[in-house]
Length: 259
Image (tube, rainbow, N blue to C red; front, side):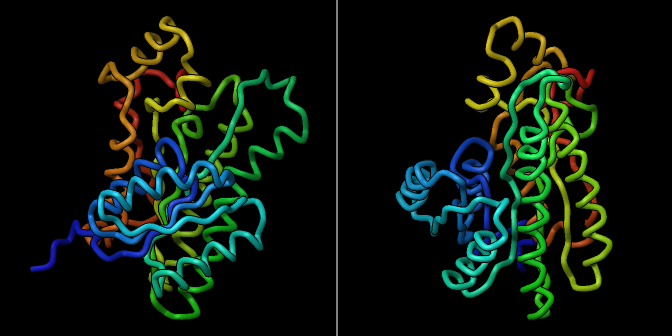
């Protein structure tokens, strides 16, 4: 009997796959027999992750890609087909942000964060969907939002707005592409223990205590705790789920401290 939770032999793209949550997602998929293409704006982030996956016996390719550039996105999708012969799962994990008071964010700063988090998710999704629709194969898209998109994000309003857009985009694409067998879902992490989050969101012990207290479980999450729901959404076990946002947030008691 086939294991409905298996991702073995699936061809998977993980954007933002060179650090943090993306690295964990790529590693977890590869460890379970998936063929993974990791992408990042920074080529320096990719090779250490790829080398570690290969050392563990996994199959991995890497490509530099700025998701704001439609031509680079098309090249990334084509690379997966060239390397693996197909694409089964696209995980739009890329993201970026910075802390700034709303009234101090420049028009360019706001547009840049929206372009990376929201426009990039659309460009990647559309590029993959065009292939799936043309070849009548169907596929899975897993978008990465944030609890910042659910509760708002004081100090990062550009990020919160973009991540809220990712959740709505997920719902809209799921409805539009369901007839093509393309399932589109979303994961919304709360506070997750990554170097980026520590530097950006809880750089002192006091702030970390407040962040920890903002979750019902009274702790921050681990990167693999975001990767594991992605495995489920990529597997046959989730074949009747689309257009959903899954919160991975430790059960928030407030929306003040989110990633």
